[in-house]
Image 1: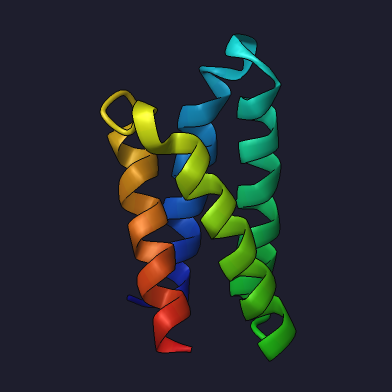
Image 2 (image 1 turned 90 degrees about the horizontal axis):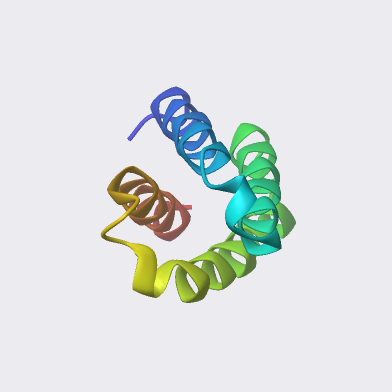
Length: 87
């Protein structure tokens, strides 16, 4: 997957999560994590890839029971994981 496509998916996932912001602080933290991952994807260095991996692990653990409610976000997290493995 191209970086441009991945970044577009990240922005779409953030937009989806904005609809759930009122459900608790965890949603806002997830949006912030996606913003940081987007910055890592935009300018990947070994340190930024490691940061993205750490953020992704946190997001995956938090989204677990909610994957069915936000399939776009779940798909984007999978795409980020694929990108990290390719770096």
